[in-house]
Amino acid sequence: MTTPASPAAAQPASDAVKQAALNAVNRYAGQKGNLLPVLHDIQHALGYIPDDAVPVLSEALQLSRAEIHGVITFYPHFHSKPMAPTVLEMCRAESCQAMGANNLIDHARQKLGCDFHETSQNGQVSLEPVYCLGLCAQSPAVMVNGQPHARVTPAKLDKLLGEGA
Picture 1 (cartoon, rainbow, N blue to C red):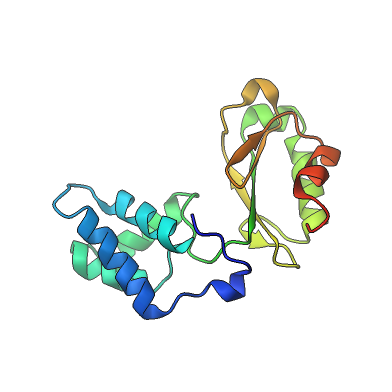
Picture 2: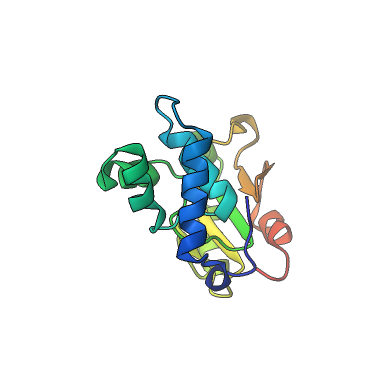
């Protein structure tokens, strides 16, 4: 996944968005149910799925814009806006909640000054919820830029995010 320096600097030109969308469609042409791999491909190329890609996909895949938008918004790993250089995903599943995830989430929200699906005030961290990282025996768990971390405490989270968060 492309990780932009800041969300504001991450806006690709509409020609680049169209080209990324068409490349993805061509890569999975003829494959039934290809919307998910096409969306993953676009997100991998651009770091997120810009709104400008939806009409291109709608025409190329013969799907309504509502269908495509519904898929993008249904799956939490698809992003329709640029993400910060650091993406913090915090598990909200039952096991993590039982082991203090809600307090950890409150700590992250306060430290970053943002809520889920938002980016910290300094633009360095995007905060996202996830509903299981497969680390239930080592709860609470988070993932930082795709790297899972277990038995996370507020102090450990601060260390993971570093001084820039």
